[in-house]
Length: 388
Image 1 (tube, one colour):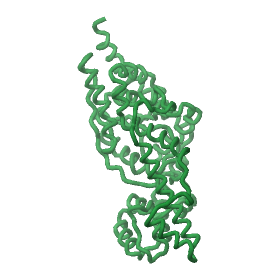
Image 2 (cartoon, one colour; image 1 turned 90 degrees about the vertical axis):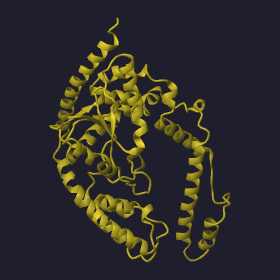
Image 3 (cartoon, rainbow, N blue to C red; image 1 turned 60 degrees about the vertical axis):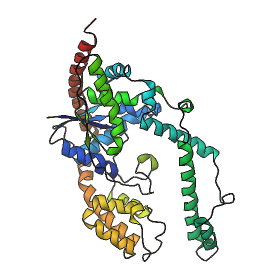
Image 4 (cartoon, rainbow, N blue to C red; image 1 turned 180 degrees about the vertical axis):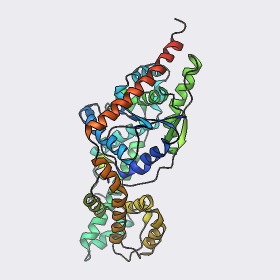
């Protein structure tokens, strides 16, 4: 069978975005491929080296959810990156084949720099209602505030100002990207993380890497490294191909990307009560204040949950939302019930898994991974030093 390599940084409990975007696909892949699923704990330190104390607990919580949704250690190799030190040796050799300029062009690196610059800009940038002078939408709502619905009007206006501020910061952060302006927080490890990623893939002679279309540039560096190594030293590595997967859009309950760091996630292991409360608190279309108001499902986190967990009814829900027939409370109640039903089997399975059992799975998988990695390392050493 062809070899598939995929993995995640240990961030702890998995949320429903992980479930629909990655884990359900992994469950299918393990039936037809030789799969290596990596806990990328070294990668977890590349942008935050003090995160080391969180890694073990996060690893156990993450792998528990992997096993609960159906990743089978009898079919797949589940391993921890730091328990396979051969990754470091291959990473070092690969780093000789990549220029600094090539790494500076990596999309994720540029995004990280822009994110840090955005944070610094936010400190300097102060927007408030008194100094803000814009026409149109904001000007009209000021009159609305003076009326009887002052509280709702002020809430809406704050949302408008927030969106303006966010757009200003976004534009500032991407203006004039200059290598000389790299923030001091960026480490050598973060700059070189794509090289370590290439080592992760190629050390198992990974032939296929599950990615979404937006992640294709990240895989390209691994392909370049494999080609360069083979050309300079000898044929060792396959050229990994993308295994394109459709990643459904799932938003957090605040409308941003679902993320543990944003505190906006619905987790696979959440109880029915937690799911209900989170769905109840989720934002919807700010223009749809009453049931009869027409809605815009394309901006509503609840609608994206319906598309992922209630696809049979999503078309009807979209139509009724746009017409104003379906109210937000009813819409939320329907998806809460669907989520509870879908996640309950996983939560029950996770409750049966002890930390000791999970550690045994990781240790056994890491042993298998080390043995396979050492075979590749020995082959690399032979071709690398064959002229010595």
